[in-house]
Length: 157
Length: 474
Image 1 (cartoon, rainbow over the protein chains, first blue to last red):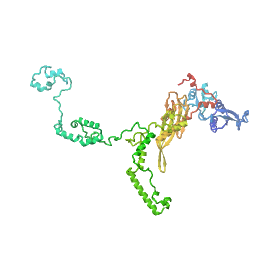
Image 2: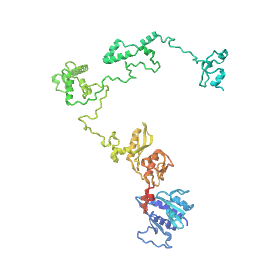
Image 3: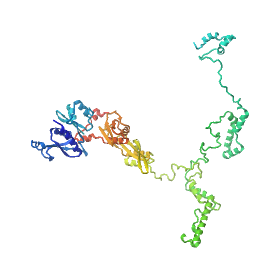
Image 4: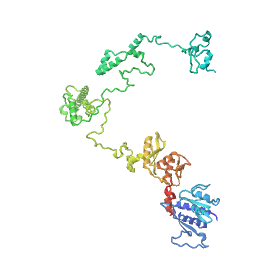
């Protein structure tokens, strides 16, 4: 499963939040969906809705995905703002298709506690990292709680 | 055995100790003459053959004729003359009889011959040009002589009655005379028929004559007043001016002072106490007599005592100049930081042609700009922050208790003023002094608030350091 769509989605998300958009969309891929739902769970994104090329109506029940419309599906994301500032300030992809960055449990523990390991800088105040593991995409703190390492997707501040 | 001990010497000299001095043989006398002189030696140094004599003979003063009684008398008569009768008369004018008696007693007590024989007259280049018997004063060396007695410490301002008496006393010294200030004018010197008309309508001859007469009158009046009050005249204008300017207004009998400066006013002038409008706020307890903190006090609401207790420090001083067509205009640019040591910090920047003025302005601005700085556990900052001004970047990181301030000296002073005790800071790029101060202030002011971040993400935040160990974490 390539991560190029995730890298593109991260960059797009940062651009959208800096442009103070309320709603934006990323391509509907499995990896994007996993990451966005993890972000929503972490409280960084208000909503994740699968829709068509146009933003879905507020109370619209999502259209079922069929083989006819799957190519035009997109994930519509509601962005959050608090005190006139975006909740999602920077989204920086860590792994890229040409270089995948994985962390083991020991490294993850050190990085999550704020200490740098290799090329990975320690997490700062209010910063979090999203990993993809064999149990799905999750925050670094949750992965540490479950004692699993994985592939670092992005770090969010 | 090079040192001759008594026992060995006895052996060497071949004599018995303490024996009667028999007549030595000629051989013994030539071989050891010294041993005959000293019988018992207690020190180890070898004995001298004879008494040490100087290599160069001294010459006694008497041999040179210096101690000749005649020469002594001549020198004494020349250098230490007694006061002549005329000089004593002159002294008598200056000093009281008791002082004269003291001077005479002093003169009698010292024999001039002793001064010649025992005294030392300096002849070096730095000797004073006179023997100081205080008969004359040297303006360069001596203090200024004070001819007048010291001012009366009990003198006070005259009241109305005393002032009237004083005025009458002053006026009595002038026998009679008209009131001053009645100088004639030009009109008084023209005939009566022209007195009503303005000067422009006078005939030419009359006008010339009147001007000449008026001029000669003024000259004579000036001369008269310059000579002083005459028998028939009253006080002149000069007298009145002198009365106004020089007459003492106090009950010191118009005493002349040694100083040309006026006496200082007493602490409380009776009659006018409390009438002066005092610009100084009595609430300051005399801490701000120059009034530089009054504006700050009004703006900040702090008292002068509180303002003075703030920690301030000059961080940057640099000299800048503006090149104009008239030349360079140099100024001093100063940056100050101010803080209360408990979470408040401000920086102020000011420029002036005088560096002292710039410092005062910058310090007041810094105090005015003080604002709260977020502190974690009242000792360090929150997380890692970065401030950037121009090419200067300051990176700051929170550190555990006891870490200390591992920062550059200007940031150290800022931290001390703000009450931050654990901090690490690096300036990876340009280290421009003023920009690094501004960037550090920006970084300290832009710390993230964990509570706000948690609220934005819809989470609840608990600092476990404040939970464990009853919150006693440092």
